[in-house]
Length: 406
Image (cartoon, rainbow, N blue to C red; front, side):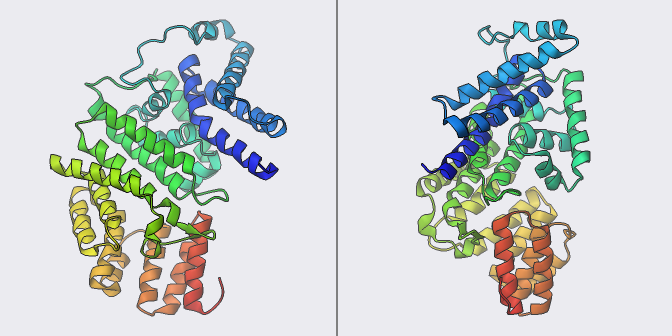
C-alpha cells in the first residue's frame, strides 16, 4: 500500500469509528462534552501515530481505550473530580450497566438520546450530525445555513439541556417506541443523505455514513418490525445506495437517466424490492414507503416508468405535502407532460435558497432552449451547491447552454 493510500485508510477508519467511540464514552461516563472532547483527542493521536507506525491489530479498540484514558484524565483534572468520579462509577467498564433499553447498541442509544423530544427539532438534527455522523461544526453550520459560531452555541445549549434534564442514554422500551421513532428515522435519513451527497471535502460521497445509516435503519426495524415505515426507510436507503457505483464518473455527478444500470448493485436492489413488497402487503402507506416505492420503480427494468413515478408522487403529495415533494414531482411531470408544464409548477414554488430548485429549473429551461435563462439558473445552482461532483456536473451543463467550456 502506498503512503497516500495508507493515510487515506487511516482517515477512513478514524471517520468510521468516531460515532462508536463517542457512544461508548457517553455510556461509560455519562457526559457528552467529556465524550466528545476525549474522542476528538484520541482521533488526533490515532492519525499521527498510525500514519507513522501503521495500524494496530484492533483500531476500534485502540481508539476506545485511548479515548477512555483521555476522558479519565479530563475528569481527574476537573475541580469537582470526586463527585464526577462517583458519577462515572469508578470508571470501570467491566461493571454491569444499568438497563439501557431494548437493544444493546451504543450508537442506537446515542441517536435516541440526540433525538429526545425535550430537545428542539433543529438541535436533534445538529447533535446527531455532530455525534453520530461526525460532521465538523463548519459542515453542520453549512447544512443549516448558519454562521459557525451560532451553530456552536446551539450545540452547546443542546448538550447543557441533555445534562440539566437528565435525558437518558438508552433505547426506549416498547410502550414508548412508537412516539419516539419518527424523529429518529428522520435523522437517520439525513445522515444517509449527508453521506450520499457529501457537502464538504474532496470526495463526493461518504460511504461510511451511508453504511452507518443503513445499519441503524436495520436496528430500528428490529425494534418495530410491525411498523411499515421502518421497513420503508430501510428499503429506501438500500435502493438508493444500490445506484452508488454509477452515480459518479471522473469526479462528476451522473444523473439517474444517464447512469449505467449494469453497474448498480443487484443484490441490494433485490432486497429493497422485497422490502417494498412487504410494505405493500400491509396497506398503510407512509412517507418512507412511498419514497421506497419510487426508488423501486427507478431500479426496475431497463428504463424508468415515469407515469408510475408521477402517480406515486401524487400519492406522496397527499401523505406528506411539501415544496420539496412538489419539486421532485415536477421532475417526473416533465418526463410525462413535458418541460413547459413542469416549469410552471417549479416557478410557483418558494424554494429560492434551495440549490436543487435552481438546478431543476435550469434543466427545464435548457430543454425548452431558453439558454440565457438556463445559464443564469445554472449559475445560481452552482453558487449554492456544496458537493464538488454536483458542481462539476452543473458547470458542464452550463457550458452546454453558453457554448463555453466547463
